[in-house]
Amino acid sequence: MVRVLTWNLFHGRDFPPNPRLRTWRSRLTRRAEVDETHMQVNADLQGQFARVIAGAEWDIALLQECPPRFLRPLAAAARGEAQRAFTSRNSLLPLTQWLARRNPDLIASWEGGSNVTLVRGSAMTERRSVILRRFPERRVMALARLASGICVANLHASARADRANEDVRAAAATAVAFAGGRPLIFGGDLNLRPAGSSLFDELAAQGFTQATAPDSIDHVMAQGGAVVQPPAPWPAERREVMAGARAIRLSDHAPVEALFEFAAP
Image 1 (tube, rainbow, N blue to C red):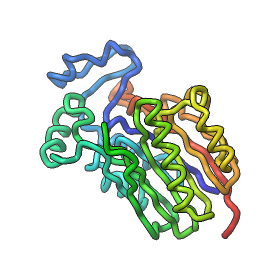
Image 2: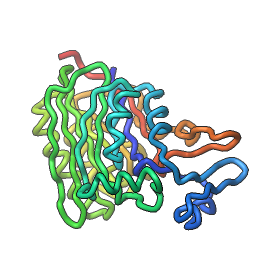
Image 3: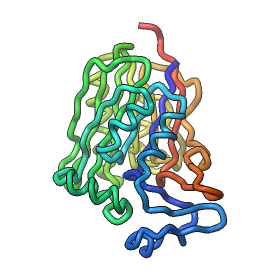
Image 4: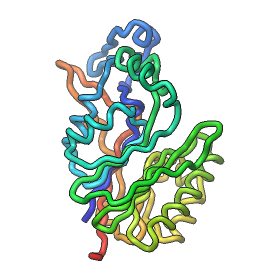
């Protein structure tokens, strides 16, 4: 069995449930905002993300909006092999990473981004980055082939629905060709809700397993495998870390987790 996690890391930032805590005062001055239960900290949360990811049970983790500087700390903490595919806004990384460490909320996505695939228990034998779109924003899929025979596709599709449909349709076709009949894990932040897109019916007709939920945009599916536990988002508290008596909620996305079974090669 293979447990898969997909999570958009929101560029390593926190996102408290109370919108009143997400202030320009915090963004400009780095002052922490608090209510009775949560904090908004505008701080470098690399260690906190690493702790949550490393502490979770998974065999394959698909991460999007991952700051490129997170790669080695995440891989080391999780004791996994890593693949990184650069996405957009990475041309001035030394400068933007320096700024992001000091004020992540102010620079936000301009730090640069990547899709990162982490694998435990099976070596990667092949890695590819496939550009899905260059304009108006670069979108990339990370493809990996594992020694176990499983192939993995990790992507973050465009925000606009029509472009997301194009991205995901092209990504699925490319991933299936890359897998060449081997089992395939396909997922990430697809920016598409099954309730509003017929593309998931197309994918089901190609043998892909069910999407996460009608209103979800984060999905993990398989081709050539059976669903043991269907994809479902974590409850909010699983992605929270404590700072004294208050919680810091990591990312504006909940991780989605699923369990699949594949026939022995």
